[in-house]
Length: 125
View 1 (cartoon, rainbow, N blue to C red):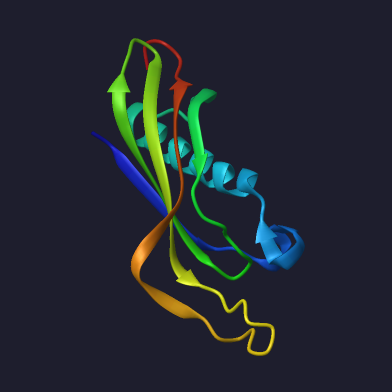
View 2: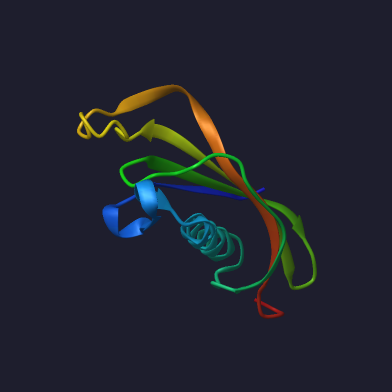
């Protein structure tokens, strides 16, 4: 099946809450971008996201963290496409106020969110 991934650094403008915490909706936006790439690769059409049937936020994400969002096409229907997603923190920004420039590469990527959902594409493409 088709897979896609995107890696991005969360910026200060992504921080939505105190402590530079990033809103979970930003991670869902990354999943949407991954879904678009999967649909283009599989169907040649961007398609439309219909619904998430699972969304779980597992760990906090802060401005400066590097996040890798991964998606995999799981099931192909007539016009529907079921996709599963995971987001991992690969580099953690410095959250020590005394040394905010200090960051670390995580030995093992940390699962920060997972989701699954359904997209649709036009029939006959």
